Length: 492
Picture: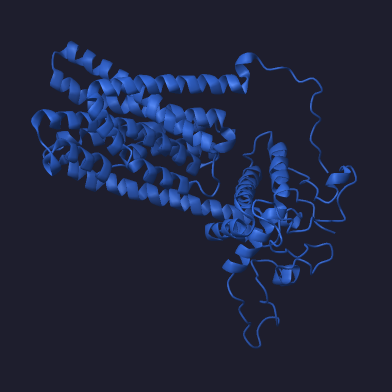
């Protein structure tokens, strides 16, 4: 069995600027200063009343958009800190960069050409798309570079870019709605005929997805680059750039729609924005389903090695079954158990994606270490997660299908097939084969919040001797990198 190289006895101490708390502190300080500056600038332009009205109206689409992106990320949910960073970067840093750069560029063009109206049009259709999309793309680039473990595909790119753009649109909507309210205060308009109502309808009701739609193109470019192998360095560099250029072009077309005549905005909205939104929505949902298929296809290798129960790959490949498992754990063992089940599902999904990357030759040099970390995380949560997953498997399994008279082997459809022999886990007992899985007991006699040791630990006879005494009951780690096409160890 392959073993990991020993750790150095005296690892070099990192420099002070490489310490995690220094980087987190510097990033938090930068975002906080940017937030204070952008708050002062927006309040100066809109006034206190306009700022409060704009804030109250601009926050309305944010929960809906955040929930949509979080739903897309449910297969392999990323850490909340990444989403918080992306939203804060879009709302504070990117918005500040856009306000300063757009104002400076527009003022310079107006001075150079002595045409303020033309400068405003040029600034909206050329300068603003380049500056704003570049500022938002910086957050995607930072997550791609420094949180590479959490950025593994197209869905991660879409979620990262979409949340960043949601934060940017939130700040921009405060500015636009606040200025519209100030205009209504001067003209005395109110109700549906006011500028505030028209701005709210266009920006919040009709097109809350506009900024996320633009930046998602950049995220897709980074996501495809994350799926590329290490040998394709040029492709990995050009794909994010191509996505950024597409985002700039779509943004420019949207901003310039007012110059296409009286109905230019509606024409661009109906003929271009809505179809693009529908196409991208279909793409990310299809990608999400493909991720679930990856879970179903990659995890059986760990079933054969003894790390997972036979029905778990198909249970973990169904979002409905996952939700049932979390609900069952919460109902019978409390919130901590439900959280443990959710973590078990996330770690198992990450393990499936890791193995797929290794099988396709895209895994990094830390493949073995990362795989061991994920297997350990699953093992520590197995006693709480397995009863819940077993319940979800029973609840979502199709009913047994009786064989036709005269065809097949009698009883071949007994139990729940899922592609495994029925005798291997008849009735989900996992005890039909010597040394196999023991029956999974329900949560019983345990109070809320206490982990229930529902599934007895594995006792495979082939665990090698070097494991310490407390780890003798766990299966051996996979013996080889999947990319080397060597099978995982099997039960005797």
